Length: 160
Picture 1 (cartoon, rainbow, N blue to C red):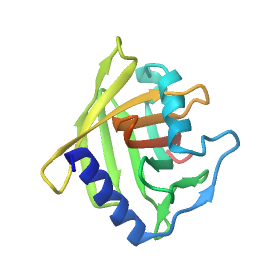
Picture 2 (tube, rainbow, N blue to C red):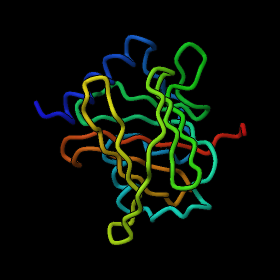
Picture 3 (spheres, rainbow, N blue to C red):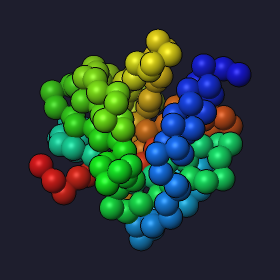
């Protein structure tokens, strides 16, 4: 099992322990792993202006998991957002389940139309994410490959 696959399994397992999968999608929100990858494929390179602020996870899909999470109000664990990202000045502050908090450099790849950052995990492994803005003005971040990976969808948080 590759590092990306193993990490996806570990994060999925940890999240599954904390809360059951939810199914409260936003209107027009992709409802499957492949649909979210398609939205990412059609997405555009985010601008600094379009990224600025806080984003909350509203969708989590993994290639091997039939119990994916979608929640238009934000996926939560113990009434708190499961994954928050705040972008500012080429840096993203990532807060995953209030356990993995870190500030990461963001790089833009104009040729591939995405921004990228790497999350350091408890397994001392860097976990790369590539993100694009979709037609719905959501931020979709993917890791791994389309055939075997993870896709996350974020909405701009209404809270400052």
